Length: 351
Image (tube, rainbow, N blue to C red; front, side, top):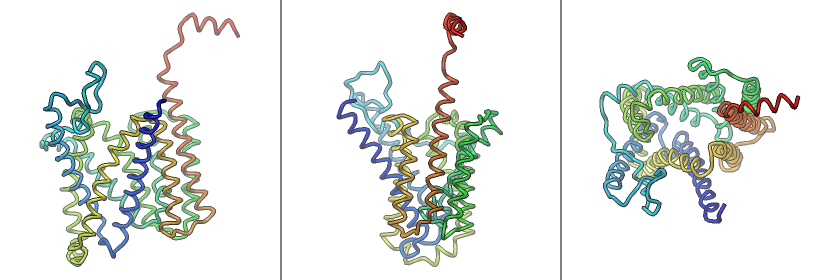
């Protein structure tokens, strides 16, 4: 590996860490600090969806311009394309168009998407930042369950043991949390459930948008903007009308806009990290990031650590990491080519 390549990989991983941790911490401020924000998590989440829609629209315009210029190529340019042609970052973004037929096909996913981000932010609002990763740690448990239920994918004993470790870590972390919130913990469990459903529904509807994740992001967030409106009016209408001071604050709207930008950026830096390293390395990086994020929260947010709470964090992260290795090995074994006849014969002769 060249020095320049190592520097690039390190910078991508560092950017992923900074964006991901900053997004969680900033959302925590917006969800729970009434001096800066307002106690209206649905409204805050809705605005972040609006910001994502605007960014997708602007990125689509830049993408049209980049693709219209002959010398530019998409970042994901394949083999056989001129190696000396400069690559355009924006060429990967399609034109943002809202077609009713495609929007209807994506609508079931959008319902799941709204549930996912709503419960995620409710969890962050009610639990300590140090407990946040533990509260949302059951995603892989639901992934395995729904994969078995809907897709018929079998579950190995090793996978079940890994899930057992995660569940034990979740219970340890919950017992060790001094400021335990039942609402926050239940929201974390529901968020994990919707995250799992979101991945399954995403696979089903991606062909509707030509397997383009940016198109799906645009449609999902536009649909979410409409879906949030009646919920905001019913549950938070009075709160918003009583929060004139915050609504006229430039600090509030700046924090809201930056959080929306981070919400969009996390998708980009995740893709960049996977491309620069590998899916396995990305999962390892994410696990290490979650550990640092939780430990930093003890200091930055003044969360009081307990032995059981810290053990719960590392048990959950350790179980998740083991699960990653097990699934990677199982996938490699399934994709391995069958042995040639003469290799099978030689093996049998050795016995």
